[in-house]
Length: 146
Image (cartoon, rainbow, N blue to C red):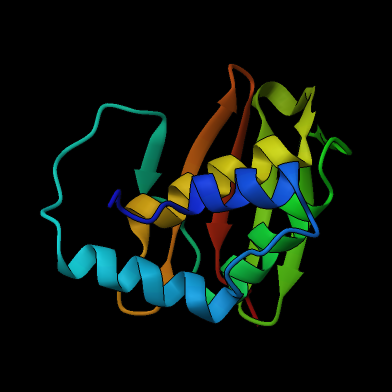
């Protein structure tokens, strides 16, 4: 059995929104079960954990945002310098571009990268991280400032 992946979960939702998918709670339980049975290893990829200068996000709220973005499918998630893609009470997914420029990707693609952040950076019910979606666009998952 292969380990659970939020990136794959988001791809599955985007490709078949009405299909039989794990709930937010079930997905988090699967990740925790996978983590308990695998060793973590360093990765060379476009993700960074814990580098956002805000509070970490509450995991279940972040997963709700990933679910929402995956459900938007091929809708464009556009960034003009800074764009809020999803906000829940204790989590937000934000897009940023270099030099306050413009870039875009499908919301499904953003959800997949957000899922990758969850796969790599989630611990103790919280997540915080960054992923480069394109050469000029990154997304962050972090907590909501009060």
